[in-house]
Each structure stands twice: as C-alpha cells, then as structure tokens.
Length: 153
Image 1 (cartoon, one colour):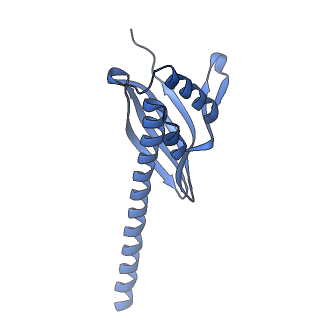
Image 2 (cartoon, one colour):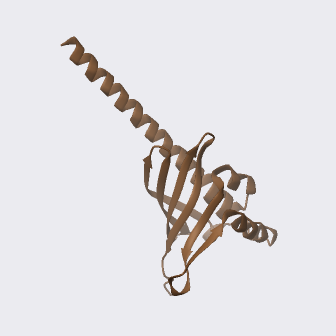
C-alpha cells in the first residue's frame, strides 16, 4: 500500500512539474512574440528587440497572385523596417499601433506554434501562425504564415 501511495505521489509531482514547464514556456513564447515581433518589428522598428526573438533564418511566407508562394527572409524584412524607421514611420501611435491577442499556443518538446489575432488600432487585420523552436538561449520565431482579412469599405 505504501508503494502504491509513493507511486501516485511521484506521478502527481511529475505531472505538476510538466504543467509548470509548459506554462513557463507559453509565457516565454508570448514574451518573445510581444517583444521581437509586436514591439520590435511592428511598432518601434527596434533591431535589438527584433534580433532578441527572431532567428536569423526566419521567413515570412505568403500567397501572391495566381496562388504563387512568396518568401520574405527576416534580413529583407529588417531592411524594410529600417527604411520605414528612417522615413519617420516608427514608432507607431494611436490608431496605427499594433497589438495582438493570443488564441492558442501548442508546444511539443522544443517546437511550438502560436496562433494570434493581429490588430492595427482596433481593427482585426490578420490571423498569424508563428512557428518557434526552443534553442539553448530560449524560444525563437522561425517562420510565419498568415491570413489577411479583406478590407471592408
């Protein structure tokens, strides 16, 4: 009987520890996306923030005309961001400020996918699917696909 109680206690502790790890990973992923993507890339044009959470091999993937796939590597996206910053388009304010709501974060080991709602001002503009890997120095965004809502006039 004592062995059975001990086995249940060990299982309960392991389950609790695993749940804490997943919860900590989800919070770390939210922080990476908020800091590197929302603040760094979208709202401020801050290269240090971008580099803190976006892997150098990151790609934005999309669908263009005639259903052709296109790819934007992070170095090109950063160049566009730097130009916008030089042109005075950052930091964003008011109804141009970007915010996100996290719909879900799915983690398996060192791989994760976050589904987020992307707002410009109060307008839901995109749903993003961001892939991340956990490296020795933490979670990094490695890929993004998205759906853009049609402009309503």
